[in-house]
Image 1 (tube, rainbow, N blue to C red):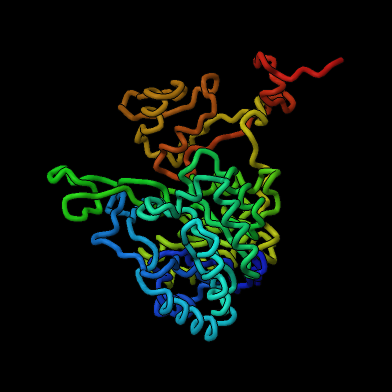
Image 2: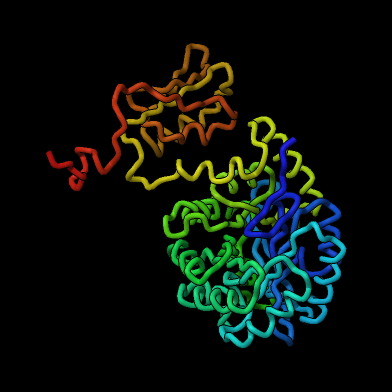
Length: 426
């Protein structure tokens, strides 16, 4: 059976599934229930200076798909609204009771070294395994010079990280904001400041929807609202890209990454790990479905690893990174063509409509004397864009089949059609 245990920048846990710093990790009651359910670790909801933050009501909203499926989740909740003393006491008690589980404490303080120097020994005294610097919160706290206001300035990221490394022996994880042009910049800054790891992504600035009668966005606080932090399955593609950018950046090579963003099942977790994450953090899925989802996550990941012959998480961690590159290095001579399985086709015509109206007119609609429709790919016109496969409601009905072009690998830097191609000297 596969070994799911990890050692993430010196922090050990029995599996890579951690609860992210959020409402599910706000108190001992929640954390204990999570550990009883099987979570390998938690990042305790962000602590700050006293007096504690004051939250508003209401706090959450959602972006829905069909049948009210929550695709994206938005929140305007701040850091912990409980006193620092109570949080520290509970962290101490939970760590003593669950020594094999990872407890990382999230922190957010002003950009003043004295404030960090004061709180860090208190965190160490709890027995916690590490700290996570919350440089990502996109609402409320940036207005006070914290959260994303720090994470969006690499110099601040490096400065505060260096302070923390000077004032604590605990591993320092820097949580990055996605509300930035190039995620590599703050990651490099964290690395330069001595960070033991980074975690990402934090939530994305968002407004999910409006009440068009009242003309106010959700979540509404009286007659007004504000942007919040967007999370859930909808942000997973953004998170995967940012994790990959850091994993393949030469300047942050080898920097441990804790992957966050839209993780709701074992497949999601495996994808983050394959792109370089050493642990994964979950929030929205647990809030929507409860702590017991970790049972299926652990079981599914373990079974998949056994099937693939991976004995440990390290065996496949980062394996997809070498296959992730810049567009200019993709093979210009590689070609795929769509193929429709007529036995599986339900004749809905979605592929034809999509291709005819918005793509390359490479699917023919054939109607026989009895009015029966058949859809066939015009191979000479197909560019292999995948749109027909994406729109088809029958999984596996349309496949993209690689073609033997008889031509060698050639990227855009070598392509004669590129006026700025790199021509080797004779």
